[in-house]
Image (cartoon, rainbow, N blue to C red; front, side, top):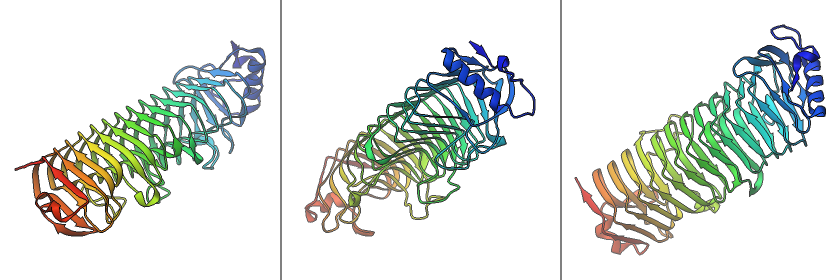
Length: 417
């Protein structure tokens, strides 16, 4: 290894040691050796990293406080960069820029960020543009923007991290234009995500996938977000499975706008204004499977979106809603369509308990086919299955009146006390 001490870096002094750290990093990369930073606090920033450099410290003991308005570490067009066991502190500065961060990498391949602690950034913690690699076992907390923001990247794995107390987002995976991405977001703990910049869902999400195709969001624990735990907007082939989502102020899991091919399976949503929403046929949103989920304890209203109505699961087009359990909804357990925005929806073999209305189906002119079969309904305080035209209730017993509405097929449902 190369020791930072050999280049004059001294821990626990107030001086800006950026020049010495830059020299040490460049020398280590040129020699093909890792650079070791002993325990202690260093003040530095705007360190440019080059091909195949490795910098590591001691977990919890090697601390770099930002100096100036630039990222602490940044790189462009490099590959095989590794940072490990470093604590990066943004209280001394850093970029106030939504397209940068305390760590900022552009077009860097095979990054490896492991066991790093990035906190108190004036905007994002980690910003990745056009990158691939692994971000694992790390902590991102207290950032004014997002914990991790990846755009136009590919083959990223963001796994087993903690992302907490961020001002506008937890983990963002975006593309500038709809297209392939392939990121895996798995096994992360995400909590207390705010929407300080406002909006109607652009901010305040634990995990936000935007225009990025072939993304997997699996086995994460997401809690206490101003909007959604997981929000997938204009995605293709999104797989959202096995996540535990609690205490959400708007929709727990959202697949919206021009999405296609979403699988939402085996998740838990406990505490949200809407449990799972698969929507926007008017924007081309279609083709989904919603199965094996538990949705319960829906709020009477959203603290952040006054337009939300309490619903367990909702879908509009080319969607199978099967094998879910929905409970304790002061509104509709499962909803199919709104006005004419309904086409090819199956609601089958679900268990729906303790709701005002168990199932609500659009029977407005122009609404497409829907099949309701084999559902177990209990504790519907108002009605088991109803038909609506926009916001108007036109059938309080759709099972008995299905013949009046050619788009509806109902059979084999059991409604009990």
